[in-house]
Image 1: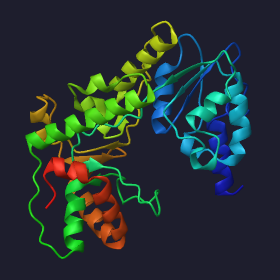
Image 2 (image 1 turned 90 degrees about the vertical axis):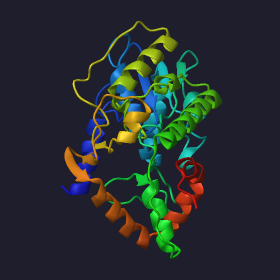
Image 3 (image 1 turned 135 degrees about the vertical axis):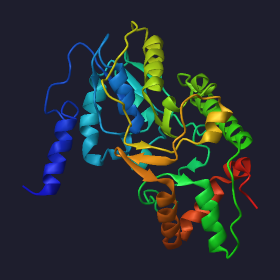
Image 4 (image 1 turned 180 degrees about the horizontal axis):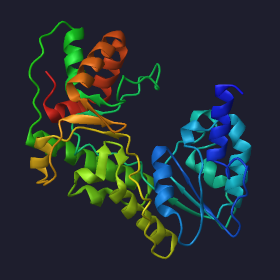
Length: 310
């Protein structure tokens, strides 16, 4: 059997109920749809009033999955979904598409995509228009300081020191919190933004990978929205735990955090010096200057908040 075939079989076994390898639960079940955050939420919703069927992340679905998706949704009692645009990636997997596949009596709850930059103020994501899947080496997160330095090099300019200050941390945090509140209001989601009014490092491992405390609180709020009995889940492990960003002393000072700062990344439980990541990304930007332009355009507001613009 080829390695590719083994990977496909392993994926289908991992999502065995979704793919019909094992029976769907009887008596009603829930489904959580969205990006990698959706599976984390499903883990913290498990047990209690109903079972929850594991499904692939929405961006992993392909045309061949739509038949099974329709079956799974057609028998579901609950759909919890992030906001997903109609006909995402050319498939009927947007939030409204998914809701349309439910039976009339099914309940729906929308949850926000959780991004909060206050704890990692220089960290951003960049999806280049030409190739949105293009990512830098080591970690897929961009640093505004490195991005600005790469832009200076691209245009033959000197590179000034760009320090992160307590004031800029707070400015980025306030901006990010307002953006999260705006997303919640725009999509009428369960609210989580209040959790970040007094942030802590334990809440986020990176700008878009929440820690267990956030999932515990969000799951409780989803259960409440559904009218389910309270039920707390301890998964016995930390979820979304493969990458931890450096924790800066300026952030600890800005939010009066007792947790110690850490100057390095942790990638798959291995410490990686921030300088190693920076150097690798600068070399990568030299090969992909279009990413620099896309990043500067997309994150000009954040660059201004940090005082990194010329």
